[in-house]
Length: 299
Ligand code: C5P
Image: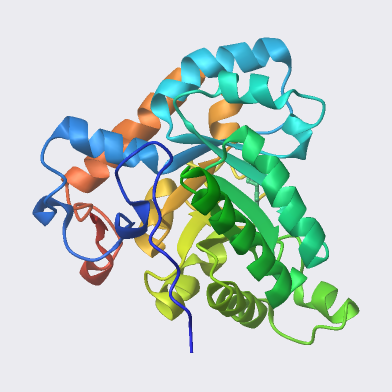
């Protein structure tokens, strides 16, 4: 039997993203929280994490001033965090959520220690590898819950990476896993849920299957997003933000389309405006999405 993940609280905010998925369901116009344009824009903004990977200090300053007003959070990985002081990282990204994408994978005790050490970044989200196993996943969630119990500071979401999108079925076979990639993603999603994790990182190709399998029990964080259809960079299968949300993504992780834009603020403004229009129109007009997949902001 699946274990229900705990309700989730935003750091320093009263809202509960666990119950506020942007996903399939009723038309946005009927949602009680979507009362006006400003409210809708804010709800959309909260669902966007800008992936800030390798960046110079100059560029960082530019991104901070131009991009942060448009996003709910930043996703930071080893390429960004290595060699940077945690206090400076927190100061740099005040006012937005911090998503630490370190993909932890080790013995349970070491992962629990790592999760505890990461609290100095005051993270909203921490990633671990689901393939680290049940005990490792439990150790990560327990470290987060214990921290909340001890300090009263809302715990970060612990979310799982299932199968890296760079791996094919052949790659899995080479490490002794004779499953189809999709089957392994769902298996590890189930393991993550049973271990009490809050969600998974979902490649665009898997978001629909994960949503169908797990309903609202797992939050889905989806990278591989490209607002422009033709600019896929190194993604084999990218989705537009609208497609990803329609498929069931809760949060969009967007890197280069924002961070490499000549004017990140203009790129972000276009993204928010496009998504606003999408929700305001019940995203039906001119859309190829079936009515049953209309997107809603649910509270
Ligand atoms: O620049 P781009 O939008 O492709 O960045 C996406 C971010 O999401 C990067 O930080 C990348 O490492 C990450 N990513 C991921 N899982 C994937 C694809 C990208 O975590 N399957």
